[in-house]
Image (cartoon, rainbow, N blue to C red; front, side, top):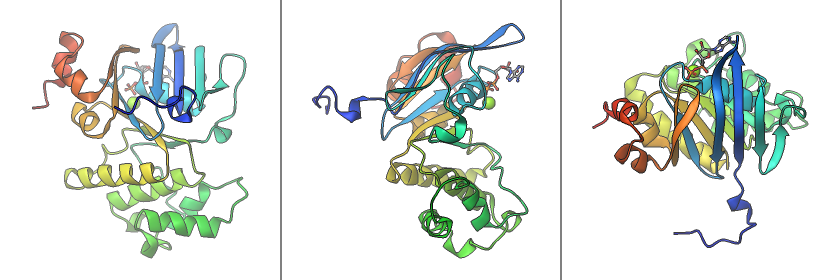
Length: 251
Ligand code: ADP
Ligand code: MG
C-alpha cells in the first residue's frame, strides 16, 4: 500500500470534492447530501439507475445548475457554496455528454478550438497537439458528419481537454457508441485523460461500465449516495437487496 505519504502532500487532497450537495425541483429533493471525492489520477464513477440524480449532480459541479445547499471544492479550495460562486468557465472543469454536441457547421479544428475560447493560447498549436493525441491529425479539416461515432467522440474529448481541465465530468459518454467500438474507446479515453493528469468523474447507469473503468464507485439511488468504495468491494458486498438487484446483470 502507498498510504505512507506526508500528510499534506497534494496527493492526499482530493482533486474534486463535494460536501452535502442538495438540489430540489418543485419542492422535490432530487439530490440529497451528496458527498463525493475524486482523487488525482483516479476515476470515480457515479453509478445508479435512471432518474436518481446523477446528471443534476454533475451539472451542479460544472456550474451550469445552482445547488440549494452544500459546497464544491477543487484541489482543496471552495469554488462554490451557497454564497460564493466561481463561474463555470473559470472552474477548470471539462464536460462531456452522451451526444457529443459537436457543431455540425464547424470543422474538426474549429470544434476543438471552440474549447479554447477566451483563453490566451495559440489555438493552432494546441489544436494540433490535441488532434495528434486523439489520433485524428488527418481529420483536421473534416466536418462532423464525415466522421464515425468513435471519431466524433474523440473530437469531443479533444475539445473538452483543450483548456487543460483539472477534472473531466463525463455523463454517459459511451452509451451512444456501437458495442464493437465501445471497449476500445473507453480504454483509449482513460489513457488520454490519465496522460493529461485529468481526474475523472464518470456518470453511468451501467454497472459493467463502472466495474471496468472506475477506481472508486459511488452508488446512487433516489438522490443519495448509498455506498462508496472500490469496485470489487461494492460488487462483492452490496449494501442491500436493491444494490444486489442492480448488479445482477454482471456475471
Ligand atoms: P439521472 O441523470 O440519474 O437520470 P437526473 O439528474 O437527470 O437523473 O434527474 C433526477 C430527477 O430530477 C428526475 O426525476 C428528473 O425528472 C428531475 N429533474 C431533473 N432536472 C429537472 C428540472 N430542470 N426540472 C424539474 N425536474 C428535473
Ligand atoms: Mg442523466
